[in-house]
Length: 261
View 1: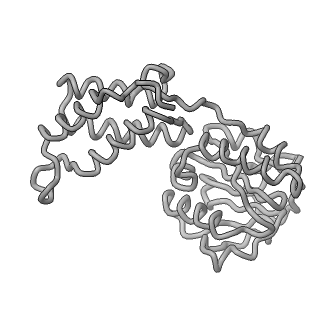
View 2 (view 1 turned 45 degrees about the vertical axis):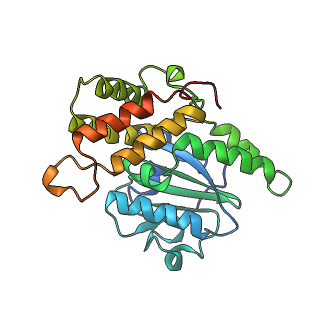
């Protein structure tokens, strides 16, 4: 149960966004996700940067402050740093929202586009980190542990390629690696598919650790040095052939899958 917010919103705003207990309405959350994020007694700079990134991703220059007579507020430190709980802000099109019910945490929710930017580390990573934060501050704000329990990580963190759950976006990354190293797709097809699957994995909160995290990081860095269009490549960028050779070498490294967690 969170502290109910006063209904200062206009028609069609708080209604579909919040439920009777002051939390996000189930109907609005359909197709969306939620990440608990540490906060103080006011919205701090780190939370505000998340809000700003989410707004930028969905193309809106401001948030609607439901708890302040639906006032439009710019997602900047100057515009939001005085926000205290209980409060809720949302984008004009309701793609993203931030619930600040009590000191110590906020709930950031929204579409994949909004959350991928606002919670760039991934939903599960944010939830796992919040669990550690809640345990560390249990004496000051004991209710944080209840929040952490309500929003646990969905996926465990995979350590090795063979551990990845079939049907996930991370499984798609593994499939693309196999196809590319075996010459079953072009470098451009691999790059396009990889970036799309990586964005999906992040928005779903899929996590990796150990050897698998190292492999994914190295592939990311290789693709950062690759541009599909030869005419747009800078000196030193990888060619299609060089990218394939680099990826093959990463996949075939002897330490890969050796059990390092």
